[in-house]
Image 1 (cartoon, helix red, strand yellow):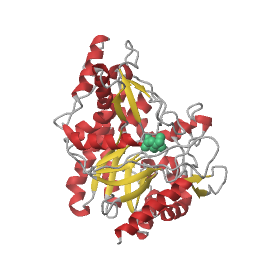
Image 2: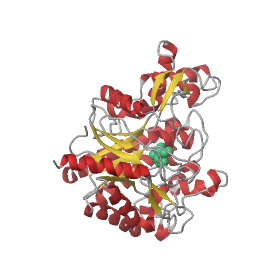
Image 3: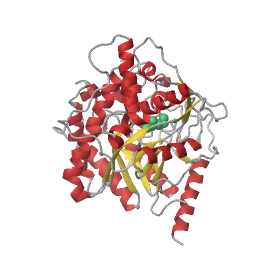
Amino acid sequence: MFPCGFAWGAATAAYQIEGGWEADGKGASIWDTFCHEKGRVFGEHNGDIACNSYELWDRDLECIQQLGLTHYRLSLSWSRLLPDGTTEHVNQKGVQYYNKVIDDLLVCNVTPMVTLYHFDLPQALQDKGGWKSASVASLFDSYARFCFQTFGDRVKLWITINEPYVCAKLGHEDGIHAPGLKEPGTAAYLVGHNMLRAHAMAWHSYDSLYRPKQKGAVSLAINSDWVEPLHPGCPDHVAAAERLLAFSLGWFAWPVFVTGDYPEIMRSAIDAQSERLGHSGGSRLPSFSEDEPQVLGTADFFALNYYTSRKVKPGGGHGRTLCMKSDRDAEEVLDPSWPISGVSWLAVVPDGIRKLLNYIKDTCNNPAVYITENGFAQVGPLQIEDERRSVGEDKVNVRGYFAWSLLDNFEWADGTSVRFGLFHVDFSDTQRRRTVYRSGQEYAKMIQKYKSDQSR
Ligand code: BGC
C-alpha cells in the first residue's frame, strides 16, 4: 500500500532536456564543452537543442498533466543562472525561465523537487580546477544560497547534488563523462570529497538561513546498485560484496547518514593498495576537517537513485594499477536470469530495490526515502507499445517515487540513442513531438488508481 501523500513523480535534468545551450546569456557548462569535442559522445550527439524544453516547456507541462503527476523533479542549470558560475553576474533570463516553470507547476498542483547540480558544472569553474579544487565548495554554497533565496519561497524539496559517485568516477576516473578526465585512483576521491563538502555547506546554509522561514527539506541524491555475493557461502565473495557497497552507497551515505566519515572498509582497502603499490603522500581518500561544517546529519531525507543490481566476487581490477577498481577488488557479474534492458549495464532486478531499501532502513537509521530516479531504457527500433516497467515497494518509509525520465532525452555518453522516457521525443522533428509510451499510460493509470483510492 502506498501511504497517504505519496509523491508520484518523474524526473529530468537541465542538460538532458533544455537545449538553448547559449540562449539568452547562458554560460557554457562542462557538458557543452565535452559534447563539442570530437569522439566523446555516441554519434557526436550533443544537448545543444535536446528536447528543447527551454522553448517548449509548455509541452512538458502538458505531459506532466497527462500523467497526473503530483511531483516533478527538475534540475537548474547553474550556468544558465550564473553564466560564470559566480553570483557576480546573474542572468535574469535564466531566473525568469525557472520562475515560470516553478509557478506553472504550482498552478497545476504539481510539487517541484529541484536539483541544484546534475552533472553540468559551469565551464568557467572547470577552468579554475573544477571539482578537484577545494574552492569549488564555497562557490557551490553561494550558488545554492542564491537559489534558495530566489526560488525557496515556492520550492520545498531540494537536492543539492545528483549522484556524486557518477560525477566523480565517470567524469574523473573513467573519463567517459564531462569533464572527461582520466586520473585513476586519485581524482575521483578528491572530487567526491569536494562534492560532500559543497553539499554540507549548502545544507547548513539552508538550515540556518532559509529553513526557519521556508520550511523545506534538503538532501543529496545517492545512486547505488544492490549487490550480493556471487556465492553467498564463500567468505571472499561476501567480503567483495561488502566492499563494493562501501565504495558505492557507503562512499556518500556513511559520511552523511551514519558516521560522518567514509566507511572504514573503503579507507582500509584504498590505503592497503597504496602501500602495496608504494604510493606515498598520504591517503588518497581525503579526511573531513573539523574546521568545516560537519557533514554528518546533512540530509533531511534519503534520496535514492536505483537502476540495477550486481552479483560480486573478488577481482575486476588490475591488481598492480592504481585505480578504483583495484582498490575495491570486486568484480561485478550479471546473473544470467536477469533480463537486460536497452543498455548493457541495466539488468532488470526489481527485487534489488526492495533489498536496498531495507538495507538503507537498517544501516542509515530508517530515514524517510524518496526514490528520486528509477528507470528502464529502450534502444533500437522505436516501440511506443513498450514493455511495462514496475517497481517493488516494501515496509520502509518511502515517501515518493520519481520515474526516470519524463521524456526521452540526451542520455549523456549515449546521446539520444538510449531512450528512458515515459514520453517518446522525436529528435528528427524540429518541434520535438512528444508521444506517450504504453509505459507512460500504465504509470498514469497507477497514479489515477492511487488518487481515487485515497479520495474514498
Ligand atoms: C542520471 C541520469 C541518467 C540516468 C540513466 C542517472 O545516473 O542521474 O541523468 O540519465 O541515470 O543513465
